[in-house]
Length: 60
Image 1 (cartoon, rainbow, N blue to C red):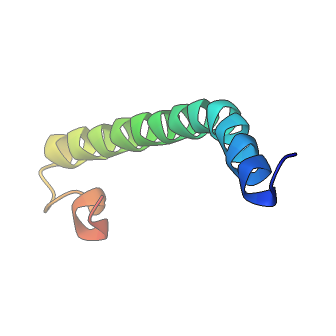
Image 2: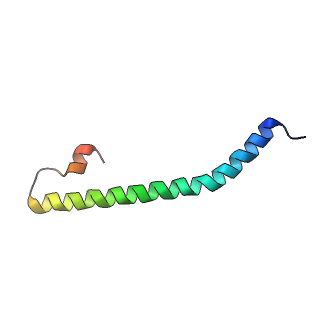
Image 3: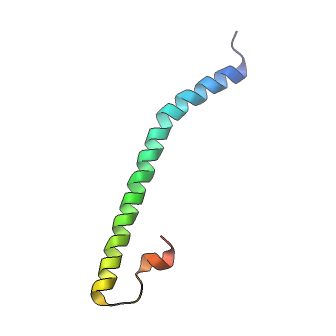
């Protein structure tokens, strides 16, 4: 006989196996996009000789 806790633990394992990779990939993609934008802004700021690039002020 399954206890509710046991079922919850099993469900949690299944959920983490399916959800974690997607969350990981999304955050990886997000940080990659953010990093790319930051780099682009930095290069633009450097090229025009302006003060620190916008992403520095945003704390990104």
